[in-house]
Image (cartoon, rainbow, N blue to C red; front, side, top):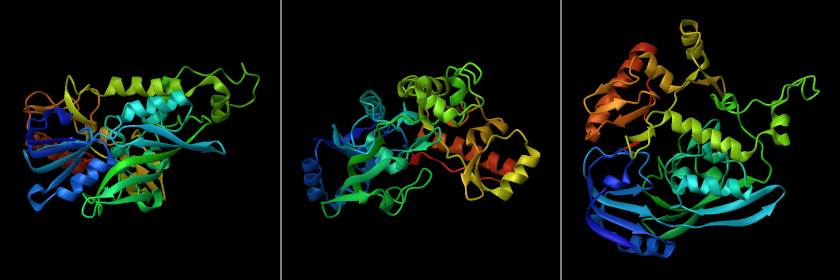
Length: 355
C-alpha cells in the first residue's frame, strides 16, 4: 500500500493539470482497502475516488484524500450456454482488459477499445462508444462501503445505469469503492457496426452478387467470418487515434461533453433547419445528437481561449495546449455551452468529472 502526503497528481490526470492532494492512498488488495476504511477520519475528508484520471478535470489543489485502486487480475469464473463470466480487478487498465478478452475469444467489448482509464471506471461511468455501453455486459460490481467497511456485491439492475450515468455518480457518490467488476461476455462474435463511420472503415465485404445472394444481410455475412473481433477492435483503435490526441503529447480527457438526447419534437424542429444534422435513435421518441457536431457548427473546432482549446480533429475534445489551469478549461467549456444553447436551444452537459 502507498500512503503519501502533499502528493502531486500531475501524472494521475490526463489533462496534465499541475495540482496536489493532501493525502494519496493506493491499495492493491481488498484487505488493504478494508484497512484504509477502518483508519479514515474526518481529517481525511473530502474523498476523491480516482481511477486512471482520464475523466477528471482538477480546478485546483484537492484538499482531501485521494483513493486509488491498484487491484489487478483477470479470471474466468464460469462458462455456459455461449457466455462466459469474467472478473477483473478495478485497477486493471481498461484497454489491456479488452485486448485480453478479444484474445481469449470473449466478445462484446470490442467497440470499447482504446477508451482510456481503468476497469473500475467502466462500472462507475458506464463508458460507451460506437453503439455499445459497459452496462450491456456488466453482471455485477464488487465494492466496499467506505463508512462501514462492508463488502457488497451490487447486481447490474441495482446500479441505475443509463446513458453515461450510474448510481455511483449520483446518490452512491463516494459511498462505495469498486474492487472488481464481473462481465458476462459471449463466446460467439456478433459485430456491432452501425454507429458512426465504423462500417465504412472496414474492408468492404463481397457484394451480394459475388456471394450468389439476392440481398445483403449485414449481420449474417459479418458473423460468417468476413469480419473478426480483432479486425473490429483494430478499426476502433484506428478511428480513435485519428480523432483523439495522445495525452502524452496534448493533455485532454477525451470526450468532454455528453451527446445530448432530445425529444422527437425538438429533433424535428432542428432537422427542419439543419437537414444534414447527424442523429441516432435513443428510443422512446428521443433522439441523440452528436455534441461535437453542435460545437463545430458554432465555430469552436480548432479554436482556443488562452491555453485551453478545442481539438482541431474532434470538436468534442477540449485540450490543454500547455500550462493551462483547470479553471481556464472550465472557462472554455462554459463559453462553448453558452454558444450551443444560443444557437440550438440545447444545453450540453459535461462528461468529465470537474473537481
